[in-house]
View 1 (cartoon, rainbow, N blue to C red):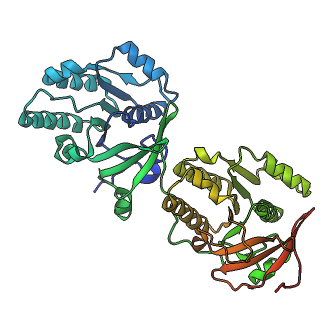
View 2: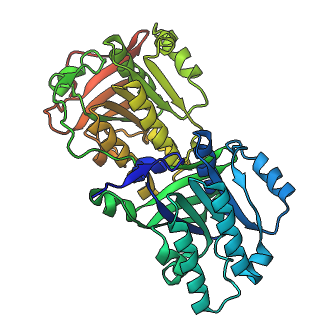
View 3: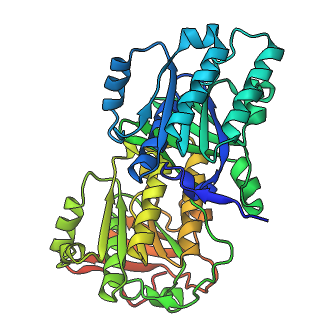
Length: 458
């Protein structure tokens, strides 16, 4: 028996979810107005055209050819080699049989490898339901005669899909939605059905709604930040980079550890994180700093005062900064960029500076916890040592502070400033899979970084 042939659909992120589209097949891309159906279809055609495929775009429209050309010119990705054959929408609704013949003739002439009819729902509009179904059966037979990937764009609401003859005839249904989420538009893509998916992945794929973005530069789908279940974790221990702290963790952190450093402003969390990264860089481990400042400039200046020349590591490609305004962060996009950098650069250590900053982009506490949970699982599955920092309210009682994401982390270290004695202290409140000392240790922020006293404080 012949195996199914998968080809790239031409949409960033979609191939990694599906593993490509089946050839030949007919896919219905449905949704209401403004969700990005046309941009998605034009990008699929343009990317295929740039690779040398013959592609055909049949818009069912009332717009003039000049207006269509002007619209397409605003799309940065659009390839001028895409063949376009517009069909007047009013004529298509009044005389669907003539339209069907016209579609057949232009397909026969162009012989495309990929075809988009946008939208297909007005076709057969003037028929009674029985005749309309017969019309679409004829259209489907015509499309099946050719070995091509066909996308039918449908102006349909989700509740109407199951009663739609177009949906019944399609090999797959992709449904796009948009909801206003406070000050942002939240776009989601879901697979109502999709033939040819790996059976092991089917339930996970069809049960999810995937975030996506649309702009003049293209259509991007963001897959989930998945963590392989069969990864072998590395139980070796690594130096944290803070003199005296490794002994509190009985020899250092496990390679796959997620450490949360929590403290009030001024306790040295940022210096702690940079010192942790610097220790790895000195051992040749590529590092990544994820921060919500506009640029790494301030961090580089702070590190210079400590005598740390981090810029040289940036220049050699060993250190990478990812800077974002927290108010503009799209969680799915942010996670995708983190994953891309880690996998492309072989990152071994990550400093995630200020998890509490994400509250500006994720107002829902469950969404924020879900994001941190998926991020820590991903880092662990890749045997990456990660240090997360977060702000907490000052407390006079060391180790009694309530830290919201502490339960997600492998280890938790609390930094504390004593107002009465004008001194700084730290203690480990949690360390999963390894023993740790429960003593409170005094530390200082010196000209060369954070250092601990060797004696235990009561």
